[in-house]
Image 1 (cartoon, protein in one colour):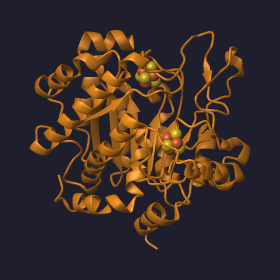
Image 2 (spheres, protein in one colour):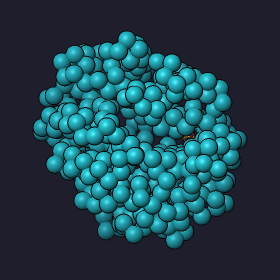
Image 3 (cartoon, helix red, strand yellow):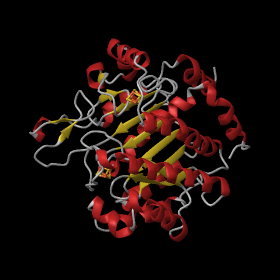
Length: 380
Ligand code: SF4
Ligand code: SF4
């Protein structure tokens, strides 16, 4: 069976292999954002060992080491035939000096077609050569960068606690546009208690004054040590819904470009981002169930020390891939993973974790006609 047909069969019918993985390459970060899920109390550093959210361990020496290149290579080789997307994130992934080698292993040793990289943009000196090198080596793959930008310049630097971060992130976004046709960059704006009141003005500033043309919107969610203040939850969500609607309207009118419409992946990503809004909003507003969640079957999360989870929210670890000699599919097929998947299905597990929603849309027959129209370029 051709690879794309096998992936489609796996997404829509079999759901045996991961199609997308998030790999937290490190939990170190140069920033200290107030909505971060990591705990940066220096005496009480986090380890993602055995559970997500994080277990806190007082002694940093007890933290297990990050996965080595050799271990990542074995994980990539054993990730199954359908893995088409990997998201490298952290912490700040460019604080790992071997990030280029990690990306290369996923592209070379697995069937990955699209590499997502989430960054706060603080290290243009690493990000741009990384993009240039990978784009040259893999002209047939897509590299998509999501760069965090949530506020006006001074406020952004203040609440992320890094002077000059706003300017560096903007520089990275602009420069990535010129690297190569297979490199895309988008600004990721997270709505939280620090920006929800000015979200509309910030958005207009980004689009009208900074000329940002590709933007995604997310709402800070309860994860790790972060909790949305309960008294603000409704207002933050309202700002998020309002801005999402504006973003959709601006994409339709051409004020925003979104991902490149000239290629299939860009059109599908734009369509998926639109389709995800309605069910996500329903679950956020009512807590209600819309459709099965496929986290843990076609999608999963690898922590920096090898712990594997179905998603970032659920406290059902599949185990540590080191205990399986770094054979990811051996872990994926084992009893703990099968029990967790059954639990997710039988309890109608639901939440507002947008990464999993991406695959809940792609795995659902109901959305296929709209995705097909988008693929053909007739549904904006
Ligand atoms: S840049 Fe990301 S990982 Fe770093 S502190 Fe901010 S939210 Fe956390
Ligand atoms: S519904 Fe949410 S918490 Fe449950 S498995 Fe899916 S992503 Fe995880």
